[in-house]
Amino acid sequence: MRNVLFGSVVLAALTVAISAQAADLKGAPVYKAVAPAYDWTGFYAGLNAGVGASQTNGSTDAEFPVTDRAGVGFAGGLQAGFNWQFAPNWVTGIEGDIGYLGIDRSFKNWPTVLALGVKTDWYGTLRGRFGYTNGPSLFYATGGAAFVKLKNSYDFFSRQTTLASKSETATGWTVGGGIETMLGGNWSAKAEYLYIDVGGADVFNADFDETAHFDNHFHIYRYGVNYKFGGPGMGAGVLPAHDWTGFYAGLSVGAGLSQDVFSGPIDTNVVGASADIAYARLTGSLQAGYNWQFSPNWVAGLEGDIGYLGNKRAFIFLNDGAPTASGFRTNWYGTARGRLGYNTGQALLYVTGGAAFVNVKNNFDDINFRGFASRTETAGGWTVGGGIEAALTERWTAKAEYLYIDAGSQDVSNPNIAGFRAATGHFENRFHIFRYGLNYKFGG
Image (cartoon, rainbow, N blue to C red; front, side, top):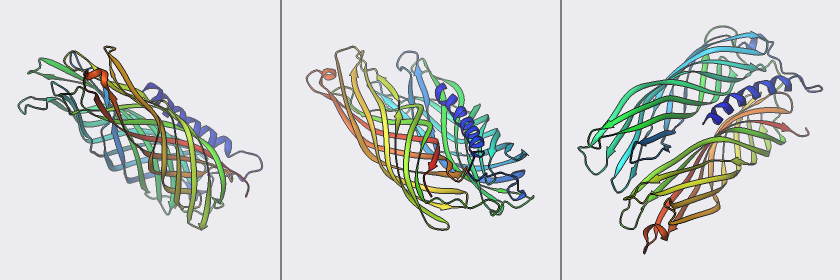
């Protein structure tokens, strides 16, 4: 996880640095934020909506090894802040937000039917922002304090009388980044990723005479709109409108979170075990595509990408002294998507969707070395998402993008676990990708 955190900061910093360099490329029109019409200074407020995903590590002293759960739910709320444009191309500020975070997820461990769970109600952050502006768009990094109202539970599924939980407003920190672009008037839109770490919690269950340990982490992928109060208008018209038509290619880096949902028996007599095998790592890819600007405000196109996705994680079930494990590993992923977007003049607000492919290996093992079973394939499925792509120069653009990938399901049978009858594990391969990218447009 430290790699993802470090990467988020580096990605945002690289975007800012590359933006500044790109604006000074010789022979290309220079997009400078020198006109009052693109003044970011002032108070603003707005709303946001997106996806929240948990990555909660859970363990107990005896029954459970460490594992991650990837509950997913709607995230939406309100934000307000103040920006100060202290130089033609640099902006700093402070922002606070509060909103709903609807995650409710637990997993079962058989035959004792124990469960660890996490449920969230709301979250908030108070962050600083620092970014580079080319005028109508702001490329920024952000970080600060975070708060999540959550409940961790350590339960017995088959007995309603056994319930242990801890509810609290957990505090911690957050880091992330995004792109915000002006829409006209005093309105702007943004695409943003936040990683939230609100620390650990211990839940004691008297019936088990045992304590469950939790480390609560969250990933927020969201889109928002802001309205700036007072000051000069933020309308377009100072910089030349960007022409989106043409072929382009580029690269992207970001965070990839797995949500590999396992279910099935851990022996021939017991069914119903379940777990979300979650893990987050840095991901990088190359993309290429073609845009067609078929009207002043609308753009359609096709894009393909292929990249590295190095997620690897396992979960162990304790089965009457004969532990079994489910796990997965990914190597690469790719997509072939259509894009449709609204052109503001200097930025493209788009949705995207199409086919997805993930090279994945799912395994269902006996960790006492009685047997190992796995299945490796390039799983096919679908993807959907969206983002903001903003012009840096006539040919260079930068984007912030979220993709949800469903790469289908797999069944892995292991006859060594159950002896005379095979035990089968069912895997559903899901992934969340948030990435920052740079594109170069050819010709035109």
